[in-house]
Each structure stands twice: as C-alpha cells, then as structure tokens.
Length: 440
Image (cartoon, rainbow, N blue to C red; front, side):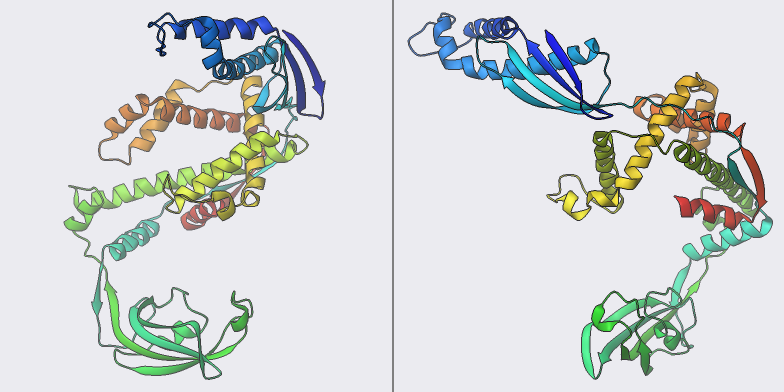
C-alpha cells in the first residue's frame, strides 16, 4: 500500500492512498464464489452458476461494497502507519476505481492538536464561604408549605401573591390590538408576567369589580407597533384566590420522605440536604473558575472544526430534549436551533476537554475507586433506596464512566488549586446557591 501525506493547514492533513488491485479483485472473487453456492438462477442447478455469470450479474454491486470496505480499512492502516490521530471522519475523494487497476483515493481530515500545557501559577480564585442557618432551613420549609398548599377563593381585595381570574381588553387609540385581550385568564400578582403597572392596578380589586387601566408599553417591547405606546385595558376580576400554606404536620413530612421523627427529623433532613446542596454549589463555583482559568491560559490552542461541529450537534440535541423535544419528530433542528447558538460554547468545551485530557496524562491521574464510590453514594443518599441506586451505577458501564470522568476532573481541579491564589468571601446560603444557579 502506497501512502503520501500533505499538510494543508495546522490541523488538516491530506493522504493519498494507493491500494494494489489484487487486494480488491481477490476479495471480490472470494465473495462471488461464496455467493455462487447459494444463488439460484433460471437455467442453472443450485450452486452451479458459473463465475462468468456471477460477475456479469453481481460483480458491479459486490465490487462497490468491497471498495467501500477496503477504503475504510486501508485509511485506518494508513493513519497508523503515518502515526496520525484523526479528529472526526475523513472526506474521501476517489481518484481511480477502475477494475484491474490499483485503487487510489485522497482522504482529507483534521488531526488532534498537540496540546502544549501552560504552567499555571498564582491564578486567582474566589471561594464562597457560607453556612446553613436555622433561618435558612425555616425559609425553605416555608417554600415547601407553599408548594403543597391550597388556593382558596377570598372576598377581600387582591394582594400581591394572590391569583386572580380576569377578563381584559386592551385598546390603543380606541382600537383593539393583537394579543391585548383575554377571557378567564389566570394571573399571579407579583409574577411580572404583564407590562409594568398592570398587576399593580389589579391590587385591591375584589371579585366582580371592573376598572380601566391607563398604561404605557416599555420602549424595548418586542412588538414594534406597541413600543412606548399609550394603551388602556378594561379589566374585570372574576375571582381572587389566596394561598393557604400546608400545615407543618406528619402528612407534609411524609411527602418529603420523612416517615418518623416528627418536625425535628424533618428539619434535620432538610438541613442535611441544604448542606449537601451548599457544598456542591461552592465546589461548582470554584471548579468553574478553575476551568475558566485553564481555557484562558490556553487561548492560543486551535481545535479541530470537526470536533466543534460534533459538539454543536450534542448541545443542540440537549437543548431540544430539555425543552420537551421527542426523538423521531420530523423537524429541521439546524434551522430551528442554528449552529451560531452553540458554536462558542462548543469550541470552549472541546478545547477544555483536550486540555484536561493532557493534564490527566501529564499528572498521571486515575479515577480513585474510593472517591468514585463516595461520589456515587452521595448522589444515591437523596433516594429512598440508596443501595439500589449504587448497584445501578456499578451495573451500568456508561453511567459509571460518567462518574469516573467527574472524579478525574475534580482531581485535576485539586491539583491546580495547589498553585492558585484563593480568596475566601463570606456570603449567605442564598447568595452561594444563587451564584451556582446563575452559572449553570
């Protein structure tokens, strides 16, 4: 097999591969001979079809099949021979496919870059320092009570936090406008769902009352015809409902997995979960800063476009699934969610993955089995049957590999933090959790 290589750019390579005709022809003949034993053709006894007839009837199809397989296999042999690491699939351009002549084709592809690690020292990290207080626990329990509470009609005027059922009709210069009217619409006061002033105008209204609100659309409103427009809404409140939080009793505790121990045990489990969430939030905030520093330090690293394209597809499909997309739907996702939405994040993820892989190799890190176990047990502790969850992870190679990758990343972070300048910043539980959510 003849192989010549050309470097067309920093990461692109072009291989010209020549494969002896005998390799293709002998494989074609071998397959035709095997097939002849099973082929049934009029005028011939089973298994007695002459090779000449087999070539005439099936030779072209078999040859196409063999050519594809030989090009694929010989490409793999060529990159091994030339000590190349292809990134993504090659673009194959056949140069000579004629029977009886040597097969020749050109394969164009990108290779993985050589990652030259930058010595990272004294990079700055800000670490949140927070704790879970009794007040934090009480506040979360109040959220639980509201989530499990009931909405009951009231005769008083509507207050912020109430839900109102209302009819409204909007007009601009006396004329109705699109999207400005509704009947039986449910609105929670304070949600900020409507334009400024609308919800404030409902406060104090009782069921059956009517009012006209004179309002102005924001200057940055998405509808050009309504930007900064003065409008009126004729509003009628049909009903007002107020939230009655659930009682702090055994029924509520059971809904959150606490079967015994009463309020004391309930508060303890809530506090434990909050502490676990806080720990993850702080670690996530620090880890994100380390990863950002890694990418910034290696900003000059060029990554293969093919890998970025693959990552764009991954992110696009993740977003599609996240917002309720179902597999098999006949949708043009690239038009619905264009590449530009994901390209920057995709490039960052590819670059970070290559750098972390090189760091893991250089630092000779391996996923510590005890850390993998403790990580899985911590994740499983939030379920009613933790041992079943642990067993599921260890019986599922893909999920186990995912945890091992996370542990390896965490070990890289720990190593890099040894040379970082860490500043601790005290904050509340809510601030620490809010920071984690904002970067998610």
